[in-house]
Image 1 (cartoon, rainbow, N blue to C red):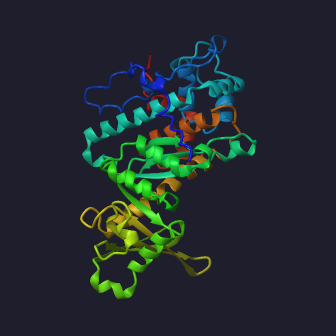
Image 2 (image 1 turned 45 degrees about the horizontal axis):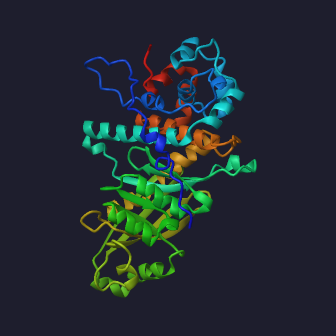
Image 3 (image 1 turned 90 degrees about the vertical axis):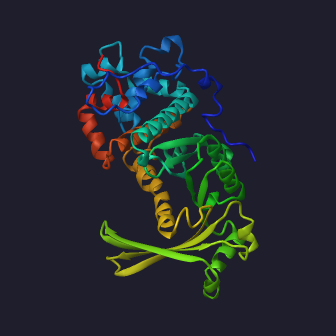
Length: 409
């Protein structure tokens, strides 16, 4: 099986880059210190364009993308009409912004690996800063999942899918890796080797419920919470058997439930966890670092059809009962799917990522990385309605410069 390509691991030039030197204007003494400026890290991305293709600084163009335009057409069409002060603070030397063809050329030439490495370095610095301010804001769980760039695929271009590690609490992307030749399992294992997982819980869907992945996480000092389905038939059979009624008297069982109402529907979730023991089935005892198995029943009331829709899912985790009781497992299990709602859905609908047809070179991957950063930065500001905030920033572009840490001068 070919090894997955991980940008941050495969770009030796990135390691030689100097530390960030750009810094924002100092805040007032009584103000909360600003977050680590993203602009400082963008300044370290090398410019691979030819000498005649550098009419506009790469740093200024990357910064304009990260000001929040949802797609390339919005960037190219809107740039010429921007406030002169906006262009000046970005660093454009002319009285107008780049045209659309210039944007395409720039994106095609961006050092994607270096850009990704600097973004991940910024994320790590922000997490360290937030932890120093408030230890309760430490990221304790990562959801790992993959995503295709469907729009670029429609053009016939071979666009590499990406797998990402996304924080449950802060909503920051902690790492990313390319899926090489369709081997998403290998890509996730490469990603986990890149990301710091010690002391964190990694949640994965059924595709990544693999022995090697479980072993890798446990050996690195992390924990896992995996969904169990038919791709692991022996494991699934052993987990299902754990919840047979006649086994209950001899087991350490515990359950939790929660219910909520919203978006016109009612939802009830119930989880039953069983601690593994020496009497557990061989398939469970042989699974690396396994401590508990669980079953989740989710019932949703559908008012239009006046009925309940029920789903049942099984899982396995390396967390023991002291580390995570049933209520904690239920929270972690639900938290995993936030990557779909708070990241993938927003990128598809708000940023129109699946509708994008950018396809040359690494352009699609570069734009995907930039969207990830925009989304992460807005989440750090506590923004919940991303679409509305992007509209506001489009009307007041100078405010978007603050999010990047661009100095007034």
